[in-house]
Each structure stands twice: as C-alpha cells, then as structure tokens.
Length: 201
Image 1 (cartoon, rainbow, N blue to C red):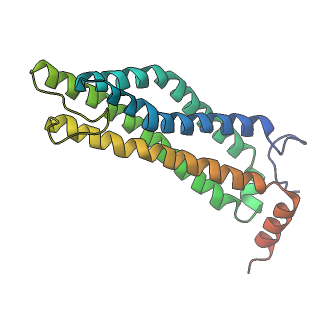
Image 2: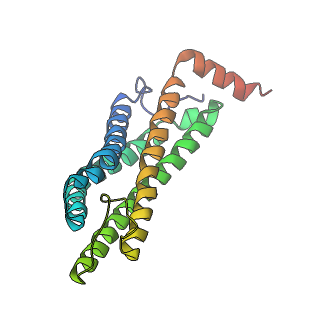
Image 3: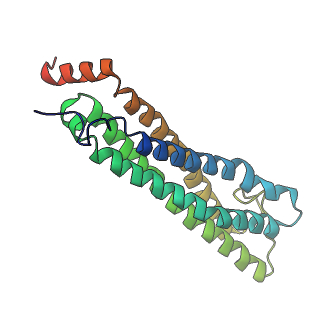
C-alpha cells in the first residue's frame, strides 16, 4: 500500500528537520538583511573611504563562517525533508510543484550568496589597489559609489549590491514556500491533494 511518508511511522511531521531548516534559513535571511542595512552602511560614519570599505569587509569576513553554517544546515535539512516526503511527492497534488519551487529558490539563494562573497572580495581588492596607487577611494559606503569612485571599484560595488539584494529575496521565498509545504501536512490538505491526484479535473 502506498503511504504519504517514506519515513518511519509517526515521523511524518519531520519536526527536527523542519526546525533546523527554518532556523537556519532565518539566520541566512536575517544575516543578509543585517549586512545590507547595517554592515554596509556602518562605514558611512567614517571619514576615509578606504576605511568604509575595510570596516564592512572585516565584518562580513567575521560573519561568513556563521552564514555558511546556516547555508549548509538549510540545504542539508532540505535533502532530509525531500527524502522523507517521497510519498507526498508522488501522491499529493501540488506538493511536487511547491518542492520544485523551493529547490529553485534554494539554488538561487546559494548562487547569490557565493557571488556576493566573491564580489565583496573584489571590492576589497579594488579598494586596496586604488589606495596603494594613491587614488582617492571616494565611496558613500561599502556598496555605494560616488561620481569620484575609481571605475574598477565602482563596477564591483554595483555587482555586489545586486547579488546581496538577491540573497534575502531568495531566502525569503524559501521561508514562504516552506510554510506552504508545512500546511500540506494538515489532514484536510492531504485529503484534498490525494483527491486531486486521483480525480484530476
């Protein structure tokens, strides 16, 4: 007989995996928002442009290990939830679509995070290179250039800014979709999903 869960009896709620996933994704989302709203802007209080970049780069570097732990925990929990939801994927209408959307959001969030880290590194390198050449590292803050910002630095700042904004967009989508998937475990939603699979309209 086909069951909705591939896990052991009584484990259909997957409470531990759900908890790890939601806490880790919240950290991933919250850290990215804090970085955009706080870390990047904090250097604006300093007088030297190079210091504005250095302070933000230092803060991001210190936060990076925490962020990557959150990323790994989120993706690991996603795998666990997928493995224990094979029955629902096969038999509950709509569950597969939501799972696919969540996988797309997770992939986007990971790609954006990796690229944001890379562009952050390039921003720091470009700022230090300009400083060594004796150029004025004139920036509004770590991610915003001015009309006097060296061209190479301004280029990487723009790329960093775009990638950083994509991280909370994708991680926020993960949280929303995860909530929808959790609702799919309710008895009424399960019955409706099964009926939709057995009696397509």
